[in-house]
Length: 279
Image (cartoon, rainbow, N blue to C red; front, side, top):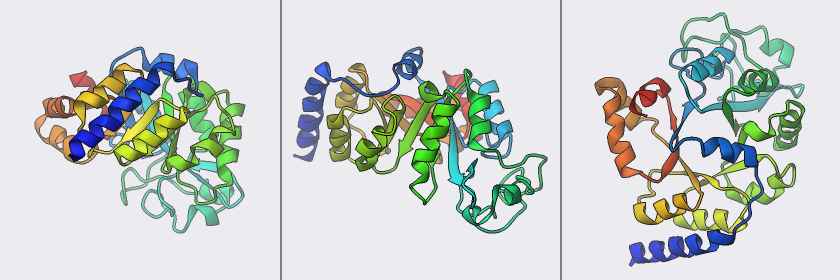
């Protein structure tokens, strides 16, 4: 019964998509159409370089990734920087919350080569610096981690200033934030997360984006593949189990991922180099 209900919901979405018009970057969608599957480097190619560093972005480009995922927070004085955690403890030589350090104080710290590892030569980059490195070379998935939501507008303004509207996916943990975020700049592509079929239906009903993050619980292969054919770009992570298997036994371990999720167009990974071997 549950499977039948899911199928009915998904099939109704397929019908409604035939006349849908979306607010997003047409150029970004053209880039996604250039190949059937895209690889996204999680926090940059951070197994080779410090996570969320300029070097990690450059390494992701070198390894042939289509997208680089980076995390955004703001310093005490409002400078947008790349940092996953709320504190700098794990990834830098410093201690304390990012939001309680000025940008000048953050610049005195060095990124660690890996979590709690040795000191590297690299420093915490600003979002502006990261966008400039990526411009014209790789799409950017911005994972907005900052607790102070007023900095969403600041982030959008910076994207506009750097001329990166056509290269950014703006990730949203809560799809209900889509309408108000969309109003900030309709040409920046929203990238919401769907945790259920109901979430996916609500996202597509808004007609504000065609790029959606799915959890591994989505297994309605036939229906989701129909949505893919209608122009929906599904993103899923191979982080954890699949990446671990590939690291141990080689890139062929990703074959089972592709067989299980044939509807996926974007894959986020800690192993962009191994994925490129498969694709």
